[in-house]
Image 1 (cartoon, rainbow, N blue to C red):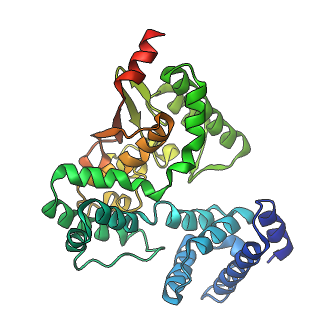
Image 2: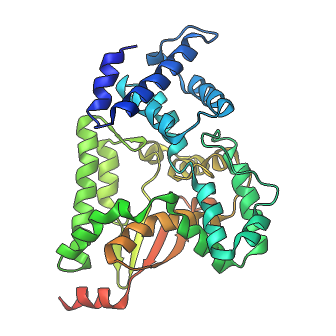
Image 3: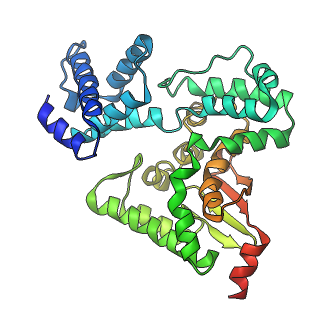
Length: 334
């Protein structure tokens, strides 16, 4: 392993010395695991199945920490192996959703009711295989919808927002305050998003999990509701960019098109395999994630409504974010 190269790569990310060494240590452990496998492989040629086997080992040893998965994802970037990067990135992308839902339920309906919802359901370990996640989701949703009214279910799920703190979006508040009105802010938001996609295309880097091509950019440009949303009177109409847009655009099978559209690690595999059937209400978790930047920008709580969901048979996911009256009037008067 190019230890010094990795050390330099990590230092450029301004990691403290102890984090750098810890990252190198887990990468070395991973390489040792790969080289000790049934068929000889260098880390650089490792495949996702072998990485997944290592994750199972990490879980069994209790070293399946967020920091270790981030370290291994970074190592995948360092050795320019997207399979490794995507395997570990996929485990931390929304990996704590069920834990956060457990926490938010306790805050909203009380610990006793929360414990009833989760009766017989163990909180999943970080790094759980994607194929196993939908079974956890359907178990939680079945009991949640049986014991709570629909409004409470939607509210709690929308509060999850992938567990991201609102501080993550603080720049959005600053940009909104600098804008003349919400339309000017939205135009700036749109331009920034397109510029970011073009940068990934030009540099050949991944946008989170996906390759950005000319076709992807043209598709997003042709749909102002995708990625950033568009204002229609007193609401923002936001359609999620497909999780794998390049594949989505050329796919003709509707089931696989829905699979490529879905961002949720806790539901996606159920679309591909056809089971289990997960309640579309679960998508309010994604709705909460979608509205959170707007709540930070406007500095107030907002209502979100699910308009389309791939779990409901649609080919895309769309959410409606309801805007405050004063924000709308300000835009329409100027």
